[in-house]
Length: 162
Image (cartoon, rainbow, N blue to C red; front, side, top):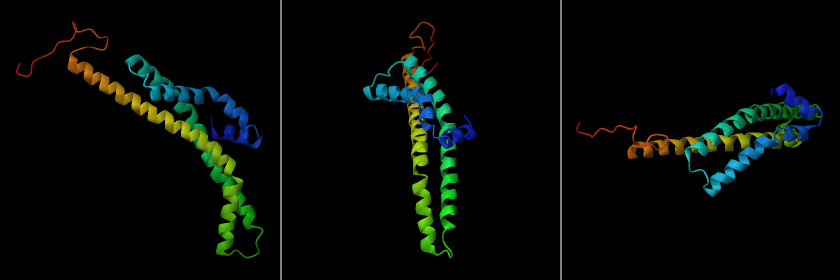
C-alpha cells in the first residue's frame, strides 16, 4: 500500500477500516509472539513457517508504518505553519508554542504510525530469532551427523585426521 492510499484513509477518517484490513497481520504477530513466549517453536518446520509468515507481515506493515510516519511529519509541519501565522512577530517562545501545537494536533497520526512500526519491529525481531534458532538447529544436527530429515545413513563424516 502506498502513501497516497494511506493518506486517503486518514483524510476520510477511515483509519478503523485500515486497521480492520490488517487485523489478520497484527494477529499473526501476536500469535507467533505467544508461541515464542510459551516456548512452542522447537522444530524446524515451525521455525520456517513462522519466518515465512512474519516476513510477509513485515512487508505489508512496513510500507504503511513508513507512510504514516511521513504523514505525521507533513501534518505536524502544516499545523506548525498554521499556528505560526497567528503571530504578528515570531519570538523563540512562539516557535516552541507552534511546535507544541503541531505535535498535539498530529498526535493521532503518531499513534497510528507507532502501531504499525512497532508491529514491524516485533515481526523483524522474531524473524531474527527464527533465523538464529534455525542456525543453531543446523549446527547441532551437523555435530550429531544428522541431515535435515533426521537420517544418519546419508551423512558422511570424516575424522579430523583423515
